[in-house]
Length: 152
Image (cartoon, rainbow, N blue to C red):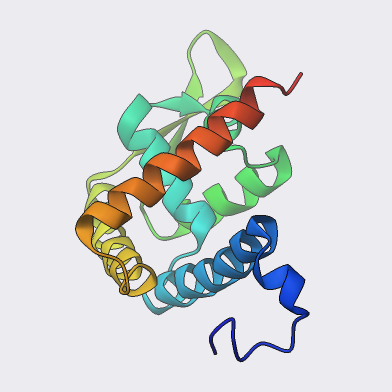
C-alpha cells in the first residue's frame, strides 16, 4: 500500500510526523518478522549488541545502554541464557548483582542477526539510492539528536 492508496486525509500525507509514523510501523513489522524468523526478538538484538560493544555488564547497565525497562531486561536475558547466548555470573564486588557476558554462541548469533538486519534495511529502503539512504539516516539522526538534547 502506498500513501496514495491509504484512506488518509490528504493533509496528513504531507505531514512529516504522519509519514514518519507510517514508515516506523512498516519498519517495526519488518524487524519483528525478520528477527522472529531467526528465532530472536528486538530486545535480544539490542542486548547482544550492547554486550558486544561495551563488554560484560550488569543487568542495570544493560538496561541503561539499551533503553529497555528493567523487568524486560531480566525476561530477555532469561531467554538468551536458556539458549546459551549469554552467561550470568555473580559480581565479585557485589554478590547481589549479576554480570552478564556474551558467549561465543551469542557472538555468532549476533552476527546472524546483523545479516538479518542488513536485509531488513535493504527491504525498507529499497526505493532509495545509496546516497538517499545516507541522507535519510543523517536527517533522522539530526531530528533525534535535537529532541534528545531537550529531554531532562
